[in-house]
Length: 308
Image (cartoon, rainbow, N blue to C red; front, top):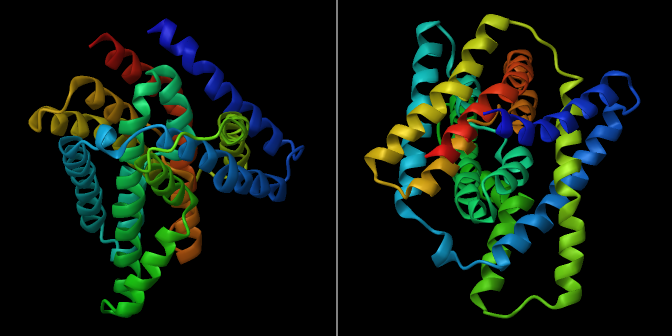
């Protein structure tokens, strides 16, 4: 456990450094926004494209893993939604809370950290988890909130969702990478080196950006944020783990997916909450609490996975 904690510590130290920079205003909110854009549109996309282009979809795709992760995540989503309804919340707020409970920071934290901790073979399962989160659950929250407000599902809604997916650089990078791989054309050396250099900026840039963005988050409605953080850090990996056993997923791949499920709340949930004007403060508090607590919880779960 101590060895794993020491391995994860540098990742969280980078987050802490970013937090300090944001908290002291050495890094302004505007600077954080531009750094996040650089990582999102360039560095992380280069990393994902390079990973995917050097793999084949047939090697990566695992129907059992996708179904198991989808089942486990949907179960947590359903539990958080039910609890929200029992508290008398409307559909929009319940959808946001469910998103907080089920969607982790796989892109900015999971891709760089888990591939280093669990080995390069982890990138396939991590990308499948990321794809499920982005395609299924990012679409679901838009459907729930927009459908609730409009009172109906319209073709314009689904067109908007489709365009949103096409504009997501992580999805585009993964799809283009696998398309390149399917052509069986080796990546030219200069291009590969360019992608390697640019992709190398993803890990420190993403972690620093997470920390700097946390500096602007407020810790309000702590009892709700605590419940949602518990769902994300404990309930989500537990239910995903149960699903992996039920669907008999390969143990190594299952361990990667469980580790991904244990990651803290994703920052893009806060952006959605702000965009729709639905409970942004409780989302920001959950991101803050879950990220701080994940220093211990992620280390524990990764250590457990590595001993299996």
